[in-house]
Length: 260
Image (cartoon, rainbow, N blue to C red; front, side):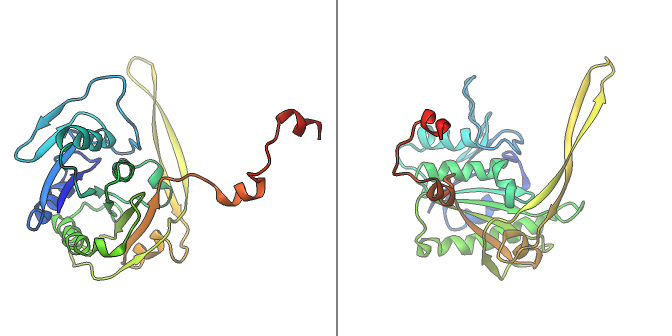
């Protein structure tokens, strides 16, 4: 397959390098990724300045923009004659589960791929506590993905849907089991830390800890049990249940509703 790899941790990130090395064994692999970390950049586009692409070796380009910028430039400039058959965004350094997907640049790259009509995967490795990753952990994720990609076409996934994969850190052991899941949920105890610089001006750090709800069938529940979580997602914010309650057949006027 002709595969485009991108991420939000930057083109030099360990997760991307291990994924690239593994997939190159069986596929034509191209990399177009941000030139620096773009975590939590969500689905942002750079519209107020020009973008640049810099060659980083054979079939490798760094973009001085966001993950979404990288995918767009790859499609419309680098590969406009022969677009990728698959986009893989990752391997992200850290989870992208539950509400995380609304912030994640890793997810945003897969969203852009789906919008452009390419099968897309977002891939993340969960970090356990404060431990650093072993290089072999990323290699294990990459080996699983290589096997999963071989059967991707049998899943018959709609073009508008992409898959969000989260891997528990098994310290380099092979991943043998996975579960299809829905998004979990967490309560994020946001903390804003106020500091003052040497010139007396205020600045702030945003932080906090997440309390996950361990609900069966969710990404968090699966990964907590040592399973790979695979969640189908699509870009559709419609609340169908509420829409049915409100009704779509009748045309209303605001003045009429106020009189009632």
